[in-house]
Length: 427
Image 1 (cartoon, one colour):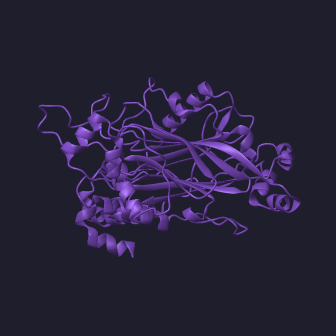
Image 2: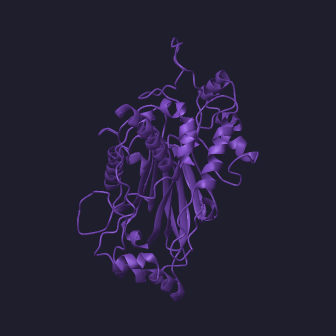
Image 3: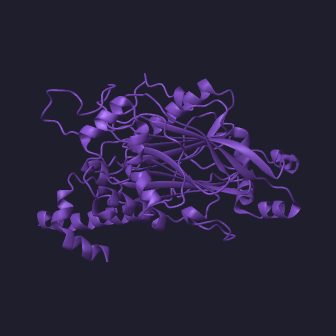
């Protein structure tokens, strides 16, 4: 009887898990300004000090801020104490956006089971320490969100914190059964003064065969179509990615180089980046209007970021005598691109941390931001939900924090063998 009950319950539990992964979670963690110096990341930020608000009247209509965006596929390897992230930190930036892929191994137990939030906290702690060591000013985390192996963490200068409004997240799974989070995106949005920002951290479909780039194109279209944010109580906030004023998409996009492997390796040895980039799948697909038409990317003047032997400077498959290993040609899998006016890229380069088989990539932008300049705008600001949070600050404000899920599912085979059962539960 117990066995029969288990047969009935498992499909239902897995179906519920799939539904949750498909819909994503609107919960996230962030610093909360208070007298408590605990570094725990538990709640979203409240207004810091209302006395700082009048300063907005003395700022020009357009304020320029420097934004750092970084991405790294860490290959399922946990950070160690020797890892130096200070190279990721430019001392002149006002906002830092850190994106990671594969912070946990993409095995079935991590895809179907509850998320390992401890590893997310480890990365946030390392970011906090790097900012403390490198930057003279204090930074606060306004959003940190994980979906399986994809993680995004956004940090702003403390004096900008009072002017951050409407932080929100949206998770889209594009992996197993086109809905699970082993591939997909975690997007965050917020408004700084009167300008909306959206950052999309992605991990797209893998594969080096001809035609695999179409799967990646489909992932991008899926992410742009399905990502949705709440419009807010005044219905004045954008709810789709491309409706935001400043948009940056980054991550392990997994696009490869459409050349024979031997030719690719020879050109890499010669550091002939121009010839290689002429055959870069992402650039070709964008130019042909197949994906991300109208988006921009800075000039790439660094070597391919994938695939290395971990803890090595040697590209995978490049060692002689290892006939059994898969040969994967080098490629610029890790990219940062943007959309919309008001963003100007001032640097685009890669780091040399060799923890994983990918190298990190970093970009710095100057972003134009509209500031509060008149009483009408200020009145709307005070009537917004952010001012309500200030009045209710005696009560802790937590964003829809999702409870830990205890069920774990050990293999993807179970799902594949019971597709018909799941379809009934998913209707």
